[in-house]
Amino acid sequence: MTMDAQVIEHMMNPKNYGALPGANAEGMGKNPENGEKVAVYLRIETDEDEPYIGDIKFQAIGCTTTVVAGSMLTEEARGLNLNGAYNLVDATMKLLEKLPAEDAACSEMVALAIKAAVDTYVKRQEDPSYPVITYQVANSCVPKEENKEEGK
Image (cartoon, rainbow, N blue to C red; front, side, top):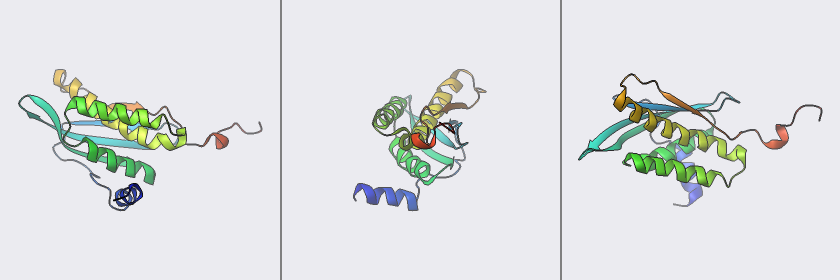
Protein backbone atom coordinates (compact mmCIF):
# COMPACT_ATOMS: atom_id res chain seq x y z
CA MET A 1 0.00 0.00 0.00
CA THR A 2 1.46 3.38 -0.97
CA MET A 3 1.72 6.17 1.60
CA ASP A 4 -1.14 8.05 -0.10
CA ALA A 5 -3.33 4.92 -0.11
CA GLN A 6 -2.52 4.42 3.57
CA VAL A 7 -3.50 8.02 4.40
CA ILE A 8 -6.76 7.67 2.45
CA GLU A 9 -7.53 4.40 4.28
CA HIS A 10 -7.01 6.11 7.66
CA MET A 11 -9.15 9.04 6.49
CA MET A 12 -12.05 6.88 5.25
CA ASN A 13 -11.88 4.28 8.04
CA PRO A 14 -10.14 5.80 11.06
CA LYS A 15 -8.71 3.15 13.37
CA ASN A 16 -9.16 3.30 17.14
CA TYR A 17 -11.72 6.12 17.07
CA GLY A 18 -14.11 6.37 20.01
CA ALA A 19 -14.30 5.90 23.76
CA LEU A 20 -12.46 3.10 25.56
CA PRO A 21 -14.42 1.40 28.34
CA GLY A 22 -12.00 0.23 31.00
CA ALA A 23 -9.37 2.87 30.18
CA ASN A 24 -7.00 3.47 33.09
CA ALA A 25 -5.38 6.61 31.71
CA GLU A 26 -6.32 9.43 29.40
CA GLY A 27 -4.63 12.56 28.12
CA MET A 28 -5.52 15.63 26.10
CA GLY A 29 -3.79 17.52 23.32
CA LYS A 30 -5.16 20.97 22.66
CA ASN A 31 -4.78 23.81 20.18
CA PRO A 32 -5.76 26.98 22.08
CA GLU A 33 -5.87 28.99 18.83
CA ASN A 34 -8.83 27.22 17.28
CA GLY A 35 -10.30 25.09 20.07
CA GLU A 36 -9.36 21.77 18.47
CA LYS A 37 -8.58 18.98 20.91
CA VAL A 38 -7.74 15.31 20.98
CA ALA A 39 -8.41 12.92 23.83
CA VAL A 40 -6.40 9.69 24.00
CA TYR A 41 -7.59 6.81 26.18
CA LEU A 42 -5.24 4.02 27.23
CA ARG A 43 -5.74 0.67 28.82
CA ILE A 44 -2.33 -0.04 30.29
CA GLU A 45 -1.70 -3.70 30.99
CA THR A 46 1.38 -5.39 32.43
CA ASP A 47 3.47 -8.28 31.20
CA GLU A 48 6.04 -9.51 33.73
CA ASP A 49 5.66 -6.20 35.60
CA GLU A 50 6.36 -4.24 32.39
CA PRO A 51 3.47 -1.84 31.66
CA TYR A 52 2.44 -1.58 27.99
CA ILE A 53 -0.41 -0.13 25.93
CA GLY A 54 -2.88 -3.01 25.73
CA ASP A 55 -5.51 -0.88 24.02
CA ILE A 56 -5.76 2.71 22.82
CA LYS A 57 -8.55 4.89 21.42
CA PHE A 58 -8.88 8.56 20.59
CA GLN A 59 -11.58 11.14 20.03
CA ALA A 60 -11.04 14.44 18.27
CA ILE A 61 -12.71 17.77 17.81
CA GLY A 62 -10.66 18.73 14.80
CA CYS A 63 -10.03 18.51 11.10
CA THR A 64 -9.55 15.46 8.90
CA THR A 65 -5.77 15.69 9.30
CA THR A 66 -6.19 15.35 13.08
CA VAL A 67 -8.31 12.20 12.65
CA VAL A 68 -5.82 10.69 10.18
CA ALA A 69 -2.90 11.47 12.53
CA GLY A 70 -4.88 10.00 15.45
CA SER A 71 -5.61 6.84 13.50
CA MET A 72 -2.00 6.36 12.38
CA LEU A 73 -0.31 7.21 15.69
CA THR A 74 -2.65 5.11 17.83
CA GLU A 75 -2.01 2.14 15.52
CA GLU A 76 1.74 2.65 16.06
CA ALA A 77 1.34 3.04 19.85
CA ARG A 78 -0.70 -0.11 20.52
CA GLY A 79 1.44 -2.77 22.18
CA LEU A 80 4.34 -0.44 23.03
CA ASN A 81 5.77 -0.31 26.53
CA LEU A 82 5.91 3.13 28.16
CA ASN A 83 9.44 3.86 26.90
CA GLY A 84 8.33 2.83 23.43
CA ALA A 85 5.38 5.22 23.65
CA TYR A 86 7.69 8.09 24.69
CA ASN A 87 10.06 7.18 21.83
CA LEU A 88 7.14 7.24 19.36
CA VAL A 89 6.15 10.72 20.60
CA ASP A 90 9.76 11.98 20.40
CA ALA A 91 10.26 10.55 16.89
CA THR A 92 6.96 12.10 15.75
CA MET A 93 7.94 15.50 17.16
CA LYS A 94 11.32 15.33 15.39
CA LEU A 95 9.62 14.53 12.07
CA LEU A 96 7.21 17.43 12.57
CA GLU A 97 10.10 19.90 12.99
CA LYS A 98 10.73 19.47 9.25
CA LEU A 99 7.19 20.52 8.30
CA PRO A 100 5.63 23.97 8.08
CA ALA A 101 3.98 24.79 11.44
CA GLU A 102 0.46 24.68 10.00
CA ASP A 103 1.06 21.14 8.69
CA ALA A 104 2.56 19.96 11.96
CA ALA A 105 -0.07 21.25 14.42
CA CYS A 106 -2.61 18.41 14.03
CA SER A 107 -0.10 15.57 14.34
CA GLU A 108 1.62 17.39 17.21
CA MET A 109 -1.72 17.57 19.04
CA VAL A 110 -2.20 13.78 18.75
CA ALA A 111 1.40 13.02 19.80
CA LEU A 112 1.03 15.32 22.82
CA ALA A 113 -2.26 13.62 23.77
CA ILE A 114 -0.50 10.22 23.75
CA LYS A 115 2.31 11.66 25.90
CA ALA A 116 -0.26 13.23 28.25
CA ALA A 117 -2.08 9.90 28.62
CA VAL A 118 1.13 8.01 29.45
CA ASP A 119 2.20 10.79 31.85
CA THR A 120 -1.25 10.65 33.52
CA TYR A 121 -0.86 6.87 33.94
CA VAL A 122 2.59 7.31 35.52
CA LYS A 123 1.31 10.00 37.95
CA ARG A 124 -1.68 7.85 38.90
CA GLN A 125 0.65 5.09 40.08
CA GLU A 126 1.50 7.39 43.01
CA ASP A 127 -1.82 9.29 43.24
CA PRO A 128 -4.87 7.44 41.81
CA SER A 129 -6.90 10.67 41.77
CA TYR A 130 -4.33 12.59 39.68
CA PRO A 131 -6.21 14.71 37.11
CA VAL A 132 -6.00 14.22 33.35
CA ILE A 133 -2.94 15.98 31.91
CA THR A 134 -3.41 18.34 28.94
CA TYR A 135 -0.58 19.60 26.70
CA GLN A 136 -0.95 22.49 24.26
CA VAL A 137 0.59 22.56 20.78
CA ALA A 138 3.50 24.87 20.03
CA ASN A 139 2.74 24.96 16.31
CA SER A 140 0.03 27.10 14.75
CA CYS A 141 -2.31 25.57 12.21
CA VAL A 142 -2.90 28.99 10.60
CA PRO A 143 -0.59 29.57 7.62
CA LYS A 144 1.85 32.41 8.31
CA GLU A 145 0.46 34.72 5.62
CA GLU A 146 -3.04 34.46 7.14
CA ASN A 147 -1.67 34.98 10.63
CA LYS A 148 -0.37 38.54 10.10
CA GLU A 149 -2.03 41.32 12.01
CA GLU A 150 -4.66 43.29 10.10
CA GLY A 151 -3.43 46.43 8.33
CA LYS A 152 0.28 45.63 8.28
